[in-house]
Every structure is written in C-alpha cells, then in structure tokens.
Length: 195
Ligand code: GDP
Image (tube, rainbow, N blue to C red):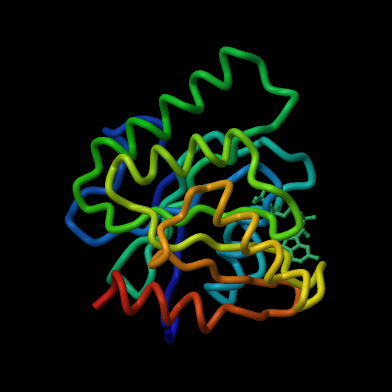
C-alpha cells in the first residue's frame, strides 16, 4: 500500500462526532498497551500520528485516520487497563459497542493481541462481540520480535483456541520495532476490504 496522505480527522466519543460520508472504515481494537498505536504508526510510516502511550489506558476516544482520502483506519480505545474505575470501564464498553453496532460503513474490525500471552477474558469477550457483529477475519499478533519462530507457532495455536477462531480466519504476526509483517497486513487488508 502506498500511503500518499494520512491525517487524523476526528477524535470522537459519540456518533454525532463520527466523520460524515461513506468511505470504508477498518477499526483496530485491543488491550491497552498491546501495541495498537505503534502498529497504526508503522502501517502509516508515521512516527507519532497515533499516540504511543507512556501511561497506558489513556485514550478514551475513537480516533479516525483518513488514508489517501480513500478510507479510514479507526483506533478504538484500548481496554483492560487495571487502574480505571468501574464507571470508566462501562463508558468504554458503551463507546465501543455503539460504534460497532451502528456504523454502516465499517468493513472490518481487527483484534490485536500480544503474541507472548494467552488472550485474556476481555480479548475473548471482544472477539465474541466482533464476530457477533459479523467481523473478525484477521487477528494481529503484536510484538513478534519478542519470541522465536518456533514459539510463534505454539502461540498461534493458543491464540486460535482461546479466541475460538474459525480455520479460515488468519493470524498475522507484526513487529513495529523491526517493521516486520507490515506488508502482509496491508496485503490482507487490501485483499479483503479495500478496493
Ligand atoms: P497501545 O496502548 O496499544 O497503543 O500500545 P503502544 O503502541 O503505546 O505500545 C505499548 C508499548 O509496547 C510501548 O512501550 C511500545 O514501545 C511497545 N511496543 C509496541 N510495539 C512493539 C513491538 O513491535 N515490539 C516491541 N518489542 N515493543 C513494542
């Protein structure tokens, strides 16, 4: 994918703040600190477009990045950060569920999980939601530089089982640090969702 332009056009909380128009959207979601901002920045060849958090759990907005004026990458707020209150957690859930359930131009939701760890209960719940709304063909396993190739296959099995992925769903390993897996992810996004 040749990125000609990428810009953040909106940080939204409620639907009336979502961008107008019918351009397709691909959303990214995952636990806070999973490497979502890093992945988005690496995909877009930008250092700081999406904020890389020194303090996890900060982003509570849905950020819309317009790419080549053709489609949006959408950064959903990270979940699972232990230090947020019950109320905040509930408001997080509402922000995400409202977006997933109402956005007609949403083409796909990509779940990010840390390649080193078993998906958590929150990840499982999230993936169930994603599938419930008819999405979820790609899971991105982040920080692939942190484990060896042989461990990678073992972890893929764990992730597939925990998330109850269908055999045709794919897991793509990504390292933002080493810039690995980026072309493959763009390839999958382009094949599936972007004309
Ligand atoms: P977010 O909260 O999901 O947006 O996560 P960030 O992108 O802010 O990353 C969280 C932490 O993981 C930061 O310290 C990053 O430097 C680190 N990180 C992100 N991606 C990678 C990666 O591919 N490899 C390694 N080793 N660290 C990463």
